[in-house]
Length: 601
Image 1 (spheres, helix red, strand yellow):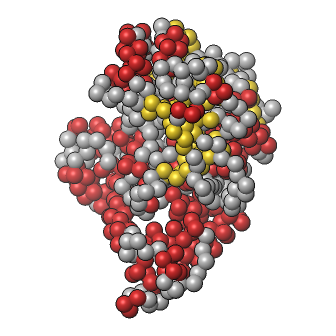
Image 2 (cartoon, helix red, strand yellow):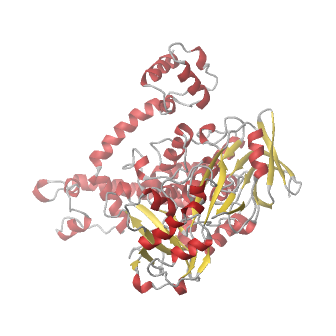
Image 3 (cartoon, helix red, strand yellow):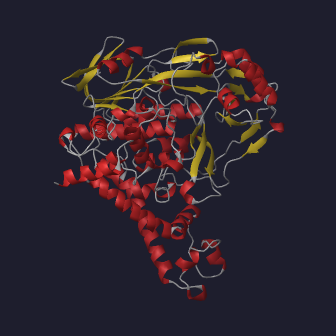
């Protein structure tokens, strides 16, 4: 192995894989360092990708040339569109994934990637000179130089695993290893660290579940792929999920043993995931709820193992054994592995630029759960952007900064680096101001050009996107110019509730055969055209503030009229634009006006 690389990526999870693949595909010599090459691309929690707000992230990763969407399509065993009964702004794709197949697939993609090498070792120290990263040192005594380093450690940064009153150092139950030295190295470089925690559920033997008592949840009849390059699934066999619920007997057992839960005994430190809480948290915080949903998810096509989504817990094995057997359908279930909680170090993300480079140390990037996020999709999004920006830095090119008007990824990063988070951050559609424009179905038209110019999107895929865009424009032009009932154009008729392409064909007003998803995409553009125009005007105003850049060399202290508090915040956050400055907590409109006047001078 070489002793110097353009990019070193620490960690082989979803963030690490996207970071390493993107930098290597952009022509940079890349080294991926992982404790175990067997766990590259491992789905360490639930066997699913996507969901509300998360499906949009996966589509955008794909549009930029990332890997997650293609891997999900290859390894998916059930596909559904969530919120299908609502408007297109909140439609979100979700897929059940064959967990083992996904691990093998992603590992294969990483291992076969040109310009990408893998080192099986543990990084114990980051080296730097003159406040700029120079390389890494490993547990086995290897020193490797690097022009840039990306840290994607997941839950392994000083990870401490809890099951009831037991605890030991680990980032995952299967791997009893924890990166304590790397935590100290980050502190030595001047970065502040915080503590977060999360929990997972037991794994069950599906052969011992009585599914006859449960409500079946099938996938969509016509499944829609994640990747824009996936044309169809062929004869896809989908595997169903099942729905059951906890009950008062379940809750009594948990309440009776709550003092032994690390979350309530004080043994578990750091902030928990608000939107994915443990079952004991749900029961204690919402005592009026008589039951809680348990979603039984298959872990693959060739395994009987089931993931009972909804019963995340840190309770002891005996308590888990007792409460799980009170749930309908699980009375005689065999538990293959018990649930557990894990606490770990994170680096508060206000210490990062929107490029994901740290403000304290040049050429050091952070991505994934170390940024304070939770979820595969958030991690992969951050890994992709970190990998792209590390490669652009090597090439001495302008960094890629996606703002809130371009993408869900832009909102994710802006929320993290501008506002910060005091709990594990999860993406939702409600976080996105311009969600009617930033839909799942148009991610390719929004971001494909960027991915293509970076060298991450293939020529054929980009040409397909341009062809789709041209076809869409031609059809919309035709609909605007063609009249139907009551002298109204077909465009105006499609804006009415209950009117779609099928209805126009029934009325013999239209004779165009379009793929179902493509037709829906055009209908969305037409039906919401008035709202879209309004959001475009809002985006224009937003862009005006984003265009006013703030130089890193600007001496905030010399600007008269700003309070000391405002000066301190602007100096600490180092916003790159007036728009970003306006979103920092505590920065007043008056301060923005003063800053604007100063910058114009």
